[in-house]
Length: 637
Image (cartoon, rainbow, N blue to C red; front, side, top):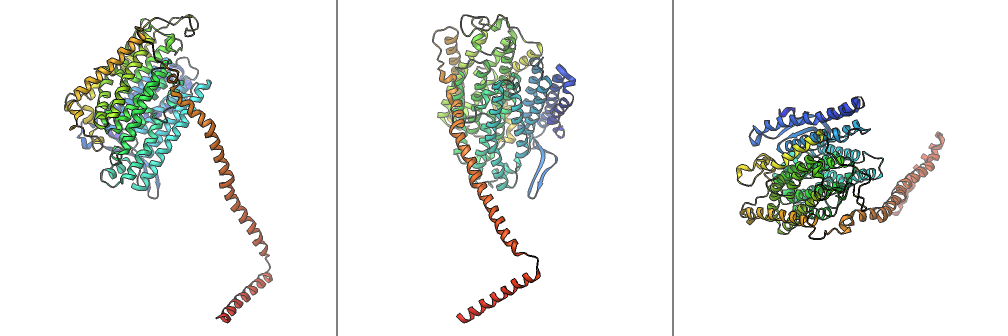
C-alpha cells in the first residue's frame, strides 16, 4: 500500500479539477458531496498506508516515492517525490479525516449560497496543497504546498469578498504569510549552499553525522522558524489569524484545526536534527516565543464577545503551547497536542458554526444564552470540546497539554510558569464562552439594551449533515488521549510510532526532578484547570465577582492597530523613500552608464567612415606615433 501513497494528494486534486469543469452542472448539494468524498477516499488510502507501515519494523518505515525529476539544473537535482514515514502519515490522517468531516459539514452550512460549487473547489485545492506540504520529500515540494495553502487561505478567507472586512482579512493573511515565506526561501538557499541538497533526508543526515556546523544549523533552523511564525501565527506574525474569522465557519475550522496553522509545527519537527545541533539559544528562543504567544493570546481571549474570535485567539494560544514543546525538545508532545487540538478545535469551530447557523448568523455571545435547551446536540458536543481544551481529565486535551508542561518544567521553570498561567486562563475563557452561549438567560430577543438581537426569532438545531461531524469529533475529543498515556512505556503508542523520526532530536528528561514527580505535576495541572473553571463560573454564572474585561484586551493589546499605524505611517514613508532611491539612484546609475556608453559609441561611430583612404591615413598616423614613442624612449635611455 505504501506505493499507492501518491493517491493521497491525487484524490483531492481530482476533486478540484472535476468541480472546476463540472461544478456548476453538479450544483447544490451534489458538488459538495462529491468534493467531500475526495478527502474521505484519501483518508481511506492513508489508513491503509498507516497499517502497512505499522506492520513493519521501525527502521523500515521510511519510503520515498519519486514521481518524476522536477528540477534537473546542474548540481541542483530536485525530484517531485513524497516521503512516506510516521510523521507524514500522521499528518495526512488527521488532515484527510477531519478535512472530510468539515467538507460534509459545509454541505449543510453553505446550502443556498450562490457560489456553492466554487467554495468546494477551493476546499479541495486547500486539502491537496496541505497534503503536498506534509508529504513532500524535500523543502521545495513542501514549499509548493506551503504557497498553495497560502493562496487558498486568501481565496477562502475573502470568499464573501463583497464585505470589505472579508476582503481586507484575505489580503492581510496573504501579505503576512509572505513575510514568513521569505524565511523558508532563505533556509532553502542555505541548505543547498552548505549541504548541496534540499532533501530532508540529506539535510537531517548531515546534522546527525556532524557535517553541519552549528552556526549554519542555527541559521537554517531560525529561518524556518520565521516561516513557521507566519503560517502558525506566532508573535509577531500572528495578527492575520483572528481576522481569518471573516471566512465561512468551515474555513475557520479547516485553517485553525486541521491544516494551515499546523504547518509550522510540522516543519520544525521534520528538521528536528538541525535544531538539535543548533546553538542552545535557538530552541530557547522558539520555546520563549511560543510561551509568550500562548499567554498573550489567552489574555486577549478573555475579553472577546464574538464566538469565533474567542476560538481564534484560543488557536493562537494553543499553537504557542506546541512551539513551547518544540523548543523544549518535546516533539512527540508537540505532535500529540497538534492531533488532539485538531479534534477539539475542529469540534468547537463547527459547534460555533452550528450556533451561528441556528442563531440566523448572529455571532455576538451577548445576544445568546440558554441555547442548550433549543440546540441540545450542539450544546452537548461543544461542552465536550470545552472540557478537552480546558484540560479536564480524561479528555484528550488534558493528556497532551500535561506532557508539554512536563517537558517545559524540565527545560525551563520560568516558561513552565507561563504555561500554567496560560492553562488557567484557557479554562477560564472557555468556561466563560460556554456560560454565555449555552447557559444563563436567553437574550435572543432582549431589546432592553444594545446587546439585544434585532427582530423576534427562535434559534433552532442544525441539520443532521452538520450534526454528525460534531458527534464524531466529540468522540475523538473524549478518547483521543489514549494514543499517548503517561502510565507506562507500553501506553506511549504515539512515541513508539514517531520514534524513527524524532529519536535524534527528542529531549531525554528521565533523570530530572520533573520526570520523577510527574504525577505531582499532573495533579497540579488538574487543580489549575478546575480553578480556572470555578473562577469563571463564579464571575459569569453566579455573579459573585465583576468580570475583568478591560478595553485594551478587547482590542488585542492594540497590537494590530499599532502595526497598521506603523505600516500606514512611517512604514509607508520608508517604502516610498526606498522606491525613490531605487528609481533615482539604482536605476539612475544603470541608465547613466547606458547613456555614457551610447554617447561614447556615437563619437567613435563617426570615425568609421567606410572609406579605405581614411583608414590608411589613420593607420599611418598610428605607425608614426609608435615609431616616435620608440625613438623618444631610445633617446631618453
